[in-house]
Picture 1 (cartoon, helix red, strand yellow):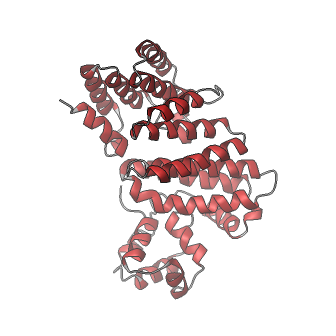
Picture 2: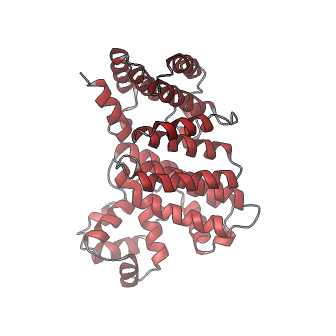
Picture 3: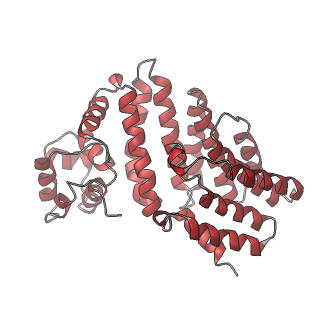
Length: 327
């Protein structure tokens, strides 16, 4: 995927050694507006884009990206509504929160084609905006805003895992779980717990993974995609703990759940990847933990063969590729 305007703006500003405040003053625009441009939350007008291109000595390269902003998928009306909410957080409404959630979904898909490091600055800017909304939203909107902040915190924790920033991941995921409870949002709470369990598995902390994976599965109100993921995850933890009979039972249960998944276009935006191809990879990790190396390699190969092309360069696909190529 081509670099977006916001990502290019951020890269060029940092390469020039300029703070957001200094560049914003030079344009001149507000620092909050510049932050929204970099995060893909707002589209600058063409004159401002040209001014930024000139100040950053981009030679027209930044301006060329202006008509097509990549992750900036909002309509002009949505951008205006979100910008107004950013300037006046107490005015945030359901439509503005939906717009921010839509940008988050686009960034998740961008990560599939780039890397966690590529999208972290954008997610941090979105997270800060969501934090303001959660702090200042009117009472009717506060649970929705807190729930969205929980999702951004959980995603930020997830993004820290590929770089093995374990403490950073834990802090974000702990915060996500607390916010999920505050919002009374079973989906976001369960996701935060399962992501925390994933981080514990990756750092070989099986006692923590055991507790978290069990807790993540307790609330059955979450959609079947997440429940399927958590069932495979629980099976892997049990297999790593040499609880083979229970692991095999849950593996069989998870395989049956895959057959009940809805079509990909009916999956929620926060779980668009919960497809049969993705779960072949989860099955591979369980088989490896059970000692079935041949079966694990084949499941990983099948996963890679069936996943959409835009996922093949993702960091989670790389783990499946390592397993498929293991001797």
